Length: 406
Image 1: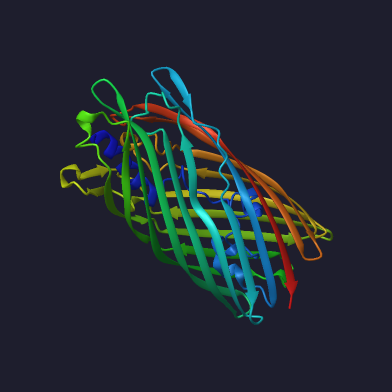
Image 2: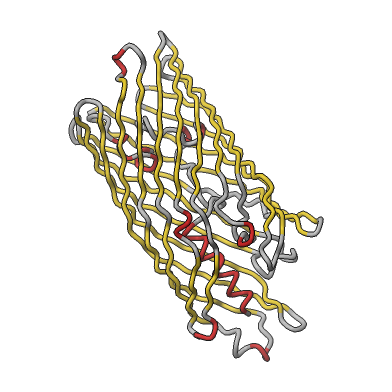
């Protein structure tokens, strides 16, 4: 019984702190193709997510919407045998709109899912008493307002309205059988974000456009309440393995991104280079206390995550301001210590390689981005289930848009 509750605690602990196995940054196809290195010069509505300062682009109405297909190909090697998660695609959508009130003031809004994956392990695998299914989704509604001044500085700020849900299924070992448990929880939270962009060199300088950007997202406090549902429970365990409520509190981590971008226009060809360094405060989760309806079952789960910096870069070549080719790369280290990494969140250091294409024509936009997420083997010493986690994820993002000058 306590192992079952420990597994639920582990997922709740990771869900608000959201280690990188569930984090999703692919909220725009162009940004995906450039490994998210658009922070310094983001100039379309996806700036609502990547850097809200970029929504200030004069008098125009601009809309972008799309979807991402994520196929997790995670593996766990235990005692010489390798087990694969189910190859079930996960499609987190995105939608943005911005409107220029004046040449120097704009508003925008975005809807996206920055944490949202499902992981299904085989029903009979050795870790079934920790997890057979885990799902985490965080839906963000993010209105913004921005202003430009001095001809080269843009500032913006917004509110994050968050709906968070989490679900875990697994088996419970009894004397001569196994019962099942399905745990689900949800909550709402509110936070804020802000962004800055500075054009160090302006486009008419003769030396190209050089931009600096910074973007910050605040922590979001989440007070979870949910239920534990037990099934296939033998009569002799019915009094202890009974449906009940659970509660806990946790925090989405703060993040800070710093970026540079350089663009130079030749006669018919443009070249853009971008770089991003991003801090994520995973250390917000040191441990998690879970309160059950039956106080005898209350537990504390250690996680001891650490903060991380991840880095990315991208190159974009444009032809006649209509056709675009993009490539990118990213290094994303794991926030987990080896002794707390469990199968609900099979994390590891990651190397991400990306690329994509773009088209612009009379205000219409179409972008396609691809990213290969390559997990480096991570040896977990988690006492209930030592394992080596690895594998990959395949990501494809399609975004369509339209802009109208006012």
